[in-house]
Image (cartoon, rainbow, N blue to C red; front, side):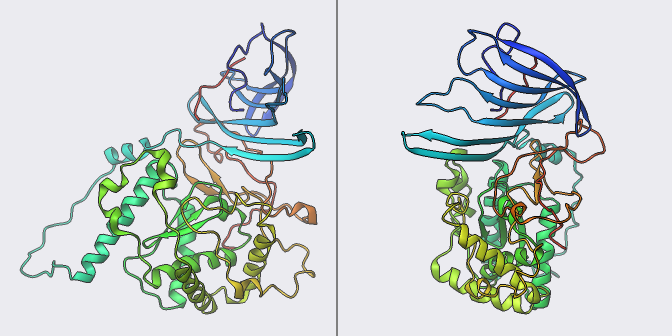
Length: 435
C-alpha cells in the first residue's frame, strides 16, 4: 500500500479518467480515476490518484486492489506521500480500513490501521552536523589547584551515565529514539516543575527523550525518561503527562539503576532487527510499587495536585479498554503505562457535568513525525469547538489528513494531523510512481 502497482502502472494495464484540479494543502494536484484494463490480471489498483502539477509525482492514492480470495485480502486504503527533499516524494502515511471481512466461514473482522514510515535519512543528519558545527575547547587548568580526581560514588555515576548515553545513542541511530527537539523540551519543563516543587536534586540531571513508536509505554534508561510517541499522543492534558513523568522520575530518585553492562560498547553491536530482544528496561514489581508510592508524594507537592482527577480519568479509561487494545498497550522495551491505584480512583466529581472533558485522545492526536529527519513536533491546529460524545474517540485509530507543502516553503511540515482536539499539553522507502 506504499506503491500503486510495481508490475506495470501504465496505459497498457490501466484506464485514466481526468476528474479535476484540487489542492492538497498548498500543493495543486491533478485528480484521476484509475481502473484496470480488462484481462490485466488480479491485484490491480482500483481507485483515485492525486498527481502534483510540477513534476507529476503521485502524492496520494485512495482505493483498493482487486482479486481478494479465500487465502488473501486487500484492504481499502488511503496512502500519502510527503515532499522531503527537492523533487523527492516519499511514502509517509497509510490509513487502512475494512468492514465486515468474513473468514473461516463464521468469523468476521472489522479492521482499521495507521501505518507510518520514517527513517529515510537515518543516521546522516547527525554525521553532517558533526562536520559543520564549531567546537570550542576549554582551556587546560592547572592540576595543582584543581580537584580532578573522582570519588568512587562519582566514578560509578559517570560509568552509569556512559551506559545510558550508549543506549540512547544506539536507539537514536536506528530510528527508535527521535532527535532532540521541542517535544523533549516540553517533557523536561514538566520534570523541572516536579523537581522544583519537591526540592529534588538528582545527579546527573534527568533528561527526557521520545520513542518514535505508537505502542503506549514509558521507561527510564538511567536518568533518561523515555515516553513513546503514541503515549504522548493520547494523553489529554498536562496533568496526565505529569503523572506518567512523576512515576518515571521516581525511579531516578529512588536510585533504580540501569544495567551497567551497556557501558561496554560491544554490548551494543547487534543487528537492528534484534533490538527489541536485546534491550529490556522493564522494572521489577517491587520497583514499580515503590515508584508508584513516590510518584503520589511528588504529585501531591506539585503544581498539578488539584488536577489529578483528570489523570485518574485517563488511567480509568485505559484500564477499561485494555482488553480491546492488547497490542497497543504491550510495550517493546519498557513497562506498561503505570496504573497508580490512588489516582485511578480519584476521578473528578463533575465528570458528567462537563461533557467536553476528554479522557484520552485518538492515536496521532498530539505529535507529528517528519519522515525524513525523524524530528517530532507538536500538532498545531485550530480548536474544533463543541465535541460530541462519539467524536471523543479515546485510543481510536483515525484517518490521516496531512497538510501537504513543497519542500523549502515556510509553511508547516506536511505531517498527519488528527481530527481531534490537539491542545498544547502545557494548557520502507521507495521511489515514487508516475502515471
